[in-house]
Length: 31
Image 1 (cartoon, rainbow, N blue to C red):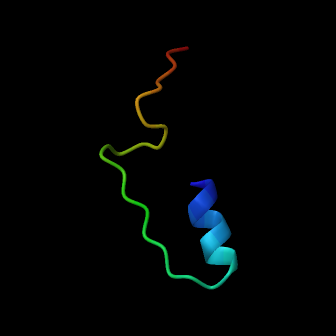
Image 2 (image 1 turned 180 degrees about the vertical axis):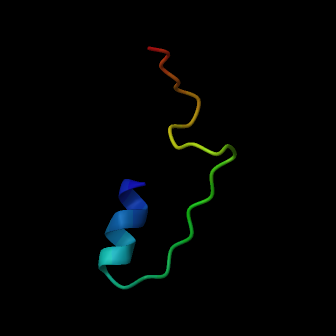
């Protein structure tokens, strides 16, 4: 996500795809 933000700031079109309906990769916290 950091790389996508940096590229977007330099006017590069970026598309970020997630495998699930939430961000965070394999990390998941239950509270």
